[in-house]
Image 1 (cartoon, one colour):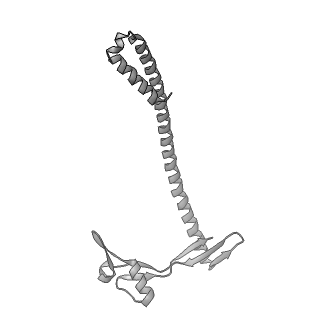
Image 2 (cartoon, one colour):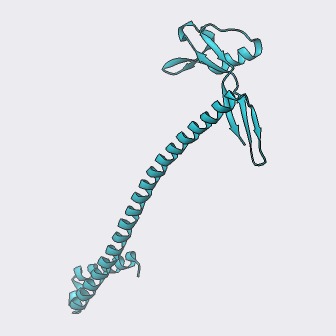
Length: 169
C-alpha cells in the first residue's frame, strides 16, 4: 500500500475516533487498534523512504566527488597535451619540418590568423574602442578587420602574424 493511502486511512480513522458518534457504537477500541496498526505501517514506509533518501544523498555525494576527481584529471590531461604538443611543435620547427603525413594522421605546423596585441591602450584612437557598460575596451576585431583591408598601422597596436599552432588530424 502507498504511503499516501496509509496516511489517508489514518486521517479517516482519526476523524472517526475524534468524532463522538464513533463512541456511541462501541467501535472505539477496534478503531484505535486499526489506528495503531496504520501508524506502524506508516512508520515502516517513512523509514524505507528515509533510507532511500539517505542512499540517494550518499550516491549524489559520491558522484560529486567523482566529478571533482575527473575535473582534476581533465585539467592534468590538458596540461600534458599542451606540453607534449609544444614539445612536438618546437622540435618540428627546429628541424624545419612543416608537415608529416602518415597513413593514420597528418601533423602540420600552421600559421595562426593575425591577432591584435595591445601595446599601449592609451595610444589607440577612440574610434577603435567599443562601449561596454562600466568600461571601454579596445575592439580587436575592428582593428583586425581594418588591418586586413588596408594594411594600415594603428597607433598603440601591433599585428601579430607569426604565431603558429600544431594541428593533428
